[in-house]
Image 1 (cartoon, rainbow, N blue to C red):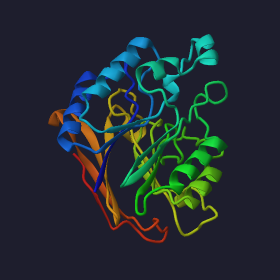
Image 2 (spheres, one colour):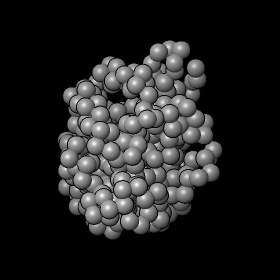
Image 3 (cartoon, rainbow, N blue to C red):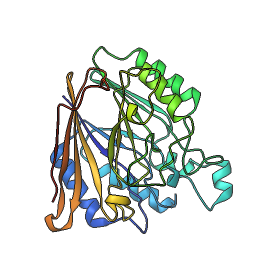
Image 4 (cartoon, rainbow, N blue to C red):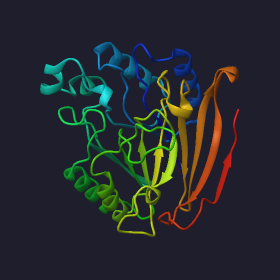
Length: 286
């Protein structure tokens, strides 16, 4: 079984919540994932001290393969010269040199794509043709049965209770390509509101029988939660076998002093046919 901890939108800086951050460290060590996916916005204003704090935090997580992508807040907003000339300098110095990356394991191929566009679309991002070509190359050599996962910061699907959720331009056409490549999961952040949808609920693409699970993570450690998750923090715990994908959505509860499961979802692994409902869907609240 492949286990992934999916966190996002840490926002180190004035809006980071230390008590929640410590609770997330504790939960991560308890869960002991094989892979940790952090889908962008490590900082609030892309400042050196914020990147340093993010790096120190990531180093405290349990030993695991880390998959990182930059978010729009990891690009300077007000330092215009930096944004135009070297928008990723601090991200590369403190977090990782790679903006697009491929992680290959016997049980999964994970493609991390930089969806930020500092000079054209800082807020809602972009996916480029060359990045889809990278996905095609990476998945062409994927071991038989390995999970195929794409990670971006910007979202591919709107959420029902947050109106300001315009997806990336060209996302629908890119979903057609990723569906053809047999992608199982897309992991994203950006909206500070968790959700799980089938891509065919968003866009009835060329393949009307198979969809991709699009798994959104809320803000894991900041005060910037939105819509239903206003002032709330969350992460996703994902377990993948050759037959199923199980996603447990965790939320932070101050009265409990930590993160606790909020909902659980179990989906079939056989290319996620649109007509087939989740094997189970169990929701609880605290």
